[in-house]
Length: 164
Image (cartoon, rainbow, N blue to C red; front, top):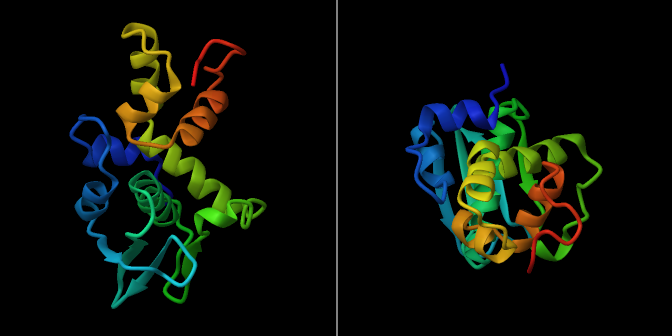
């Protein structure tokens, strides 16, 4: 049965920002391994000896590493894996590859939900008055591009309201 990002946050998150996807993965029983260069991919997830293992490239920007881990958690939580499957996430230089693949799109949406929980994001914007994309991105430890997409997807980015 597929799990949502909210399910995982409710079970494995301590409520502090930024959300720590590596800590969540480990709490789920997922091994997370840091790799130095991964032959053109940002990360991967696969089953090894019956257990999920996430690998990610430490040569990429920290915000990219965090999103990659969250993306790979998404593949696990959404049930995209089976024992014979390895899923790879594209390198940052190739953002469009996989964009049309439903599993990749779903894993990206999952990662955004995990790293930028809607209820927390709405609280920070509406109750705390933070409306600067750079500040929001910094608070959630994501890229400004990821934050901008998240705000647009949640309908929280009316034209001209948020600044870079």
